[in-house]
Each structure stands twice: as C-alpha cells, then as structure tokens.
Amino acid sequence: MSGALARRTALLAVLAAAAAAAVFPVSPAAASAPQASWVCAPETFSSLSMLRGAMPAGRGDEAREPSLNQTVENPGPQQGRGRGFSANVPTYVHVVSLPDGTGNVSDRDIRNEMRALNAGYSGAEGGYNTGFSFQLAGITRTVNADWYYAGPTTSAERAMKHALHQGGNNALNVYFTTAGPYLGWAYLPSILGSAQAYLDGVVIDWESMVHTSTKYEGQYDLGKTLTHESGHWFNLEHTFFGACNHWGDYVDDTPAEGTPTFGCPEGKDTCSDPGLDPIHNYMDYSFDSCYNQFTAGQTARMQDAWLFYRAP
Picture 1 (cartoon, rainbow, N blue to C red):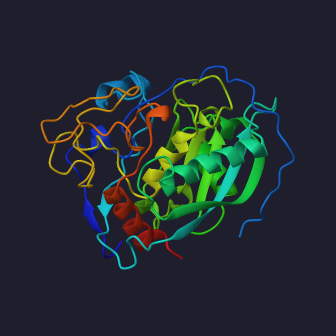
Picture 2 (picture 1 turned 180 degrees about the vertical axis):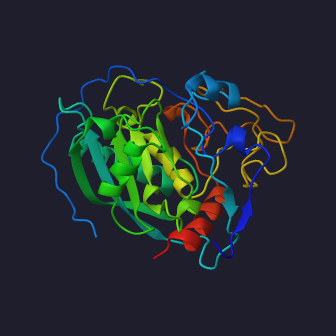
C-alpha cells in the first residue's frame, strides 16, 4: 500500500502477529440462555507441538494465538491524531453456535462484552484514553458446526467471513465461535486492500467473554481477549514482539519484554533495558484481571493506523 513503511522483522516467523498462548478446546460449558436477537442488514497453521517449538510460551505453556505470518507495516504519523482524536467504530457481532445451542451467547452477554471493550479503550481501567469507542451496529446468529470449529486460514473461516462480514474498513467484525484451539486471532490492517480483505476482523472464543463460562475462570473470563485482539486489528503488536531488541513492539513507551507473561507476576523484568515488563498492558498475555492499560505510544500507533487504513 503506497505510503506505508513496510518492515519485516528477523523474528517474524517466531513472534508474528500472533505469537503464542492459550488453549485446547474442551467440552464447552453451556452458554448463557439466549435472549431475543436482532440482525442488522449488511450493507495451516502448524500443529500445536510445532507452535510450542517455534514460538515463546504465553498464557501457560500452550499456544494462545496462531501465527498468521503478516508483514508488520508502520504507516507513520498521520494528520488528525492526538489528544483531540475521536473515532466511533461500528461493531458487528456474529454469534456462531452448535445445533445444541452451545455458544449461543445472549444479547446481555454481548452488551457486557461491549462495555468491557469500551472500558479498555477509554482509559476507564487506568490506562490512556485512546479516543476510540465501539458501538454495536448489529448482531447475527448462525448455527453451523463447521464455522464454530473453524481455525485460521481454513476454508471454513473463509466461508464464514464471506457470508457474514459487514460494513467497510472502519467496521469491526467480531466472530464468537470456539476459535479452534485458540482464545482468538485477528489480522493486522495491512490485509486491507488485498484479495483477502474480507478476512479482516476478530475471532474470539465465546468462553472468554465476561463470565459466560467457567472454562477460563479466574484467568481469561473478563472479556479482555477481545480487547487484546482488537489491538492487533488497530495495528498493535505484542509487547514482547521483538523481545529485548531495539525495535520491540514499535512503541517507545512500552518497556522491552523478553517473554510473554502468564498470570500477573509483579516485578517481572526480562530485559536489561530500563523498566519492568509491561504486564498490565492489554498487548501482553497476562490474566484478564491483570490488564488495565494501553499507553500513549500505543494510542498514537493505533490512531495512525486508523487514519491510514480505516477512517471513512
């Protein structure tokens, strides 16, 4: 895309847009009882053992996200970003469930998730106010076992997104499924303008929503997986993306971090550079209860990407 300053890091295969962390699918807990819904009209990867060998551990010793092998792009500062910046993101929620009702989260569950998402981006939990807000634009409900179990880059993912994706480049499409063996994944905005632009969006394990299940109780059940994955949608990398090297996550005010975080270990410090590991940052792999911030530098990067790729 013209104007973009494309950079591929030497560690991209190891720490690409989704370096490592969470979960095998197990028999899912029953979803909250669904309420009446409304619909807004639309306008290979490696095995888990290979992922473990190729990427750093995060969220325990299992893989949280797949490697999507996207090139990191840095569009550079854009006019219009800063403290006066404001953008409302229309958000389309697609609930994909099994025939027995598993995964058919309620409208109330979705509203709770939207509140958690807006709290993170508004700075309400203690971080920087990014200027982004999310407005629910529509809900679709689909019963489809193939799509429910779809993994990234599969034919099932492509079929699901071809059928359900709504809105333009500024619209966030969230697919609540079981997310294959992961907590979720998202594509960086560099996918826009390509033949695969329809894949743009975020896939989330519905059991990581706010108290919809006991599967991740006490770890990943406060809805922050969506906050994390939408950070990738805005062009953020993991805080541990470049480990202790000079470029890190391309953000100056997130201290260098050598490894992903599991839990909430205060005082964790994996690099010799100044500053403790940013374990409270939404782009680490900490427990949901540990997350509370985006930084000013991350905010500037997100705003630049929005203005370059997504602004209507």
